[in-house]
Amino acid sequence: DVQMTQSPSTLAASIGDRVTITCRASENVNRWLAWYQQKPGKAPKILIHKASILKPGVPSRFSGSGSGAEFTLTISSLQPDDFATYYCQQYNRFFTFGPGTTVHIK
Amino acid sequence: EVHLVESGGGSVQVGRSLRLSCGASGFMFENYAMHWVRQAPGKGLEWVAGISWNRESVAFADSVRGRFLISKDDAKKSLSLQMSSLRVEDTGLYYCVKMAGWDLPPGELNYFDSWGQGTLVTVSP
Image 1 (spheres, rainbow over the protein chains, first blue to last red):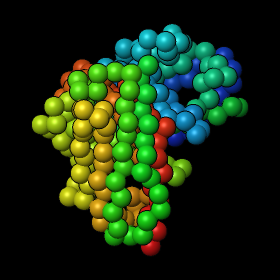
Image 2 (cartoon, rainbow over the protein chains, first blue to last red):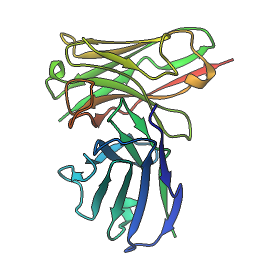
Image 3 (spheres, chains in turn purple, brown):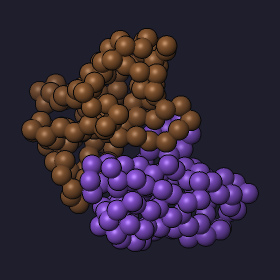
């Protein structure tokens, strides 16, 4: 099975901060990596697929990069709507989610 | 607009069975792979099972293989998850999820692009 890790598990940030979340896979997943945002009591929402392709409607302050086994999600200037939990997911060999990174208000 | 509505959740005892259903609308259901993803209370996301557009390929997480079955009824635009021999660790919110693509092997469109709101399954000792 492909194992996914994320760091940090939680982070506290202020409005306007640049935020970076790292996701690592236990093996090469090429660029088959997606990022999801989940707010409390809501279903997850796709932000990015194929490591760096932003879904239509997702603000351009979100970006993704990486390939192989290491990936990052960056929020260039944190906005109030961005406080949420973020999950990476590999879809190279079936489907595995990372444990999540919760972004709190500092 | 894609709309996925889960039903069938509830409280059951260990060892019993439960069948979840998902009604789909707003897209060509017969053309897409569909999945179930669950989330234990306060925990992260776990992929449970998936089925290809034509029902020829199915896949299960190791944790449920042999106990759960997934099926897809294109005429009714419905996805189902038959769960048997339920365990306490099966407790969670079960999401019906649409994949962007149609088949299960690795591919560019194998991410999850639409989610229902979930149905809660509680398994007690």
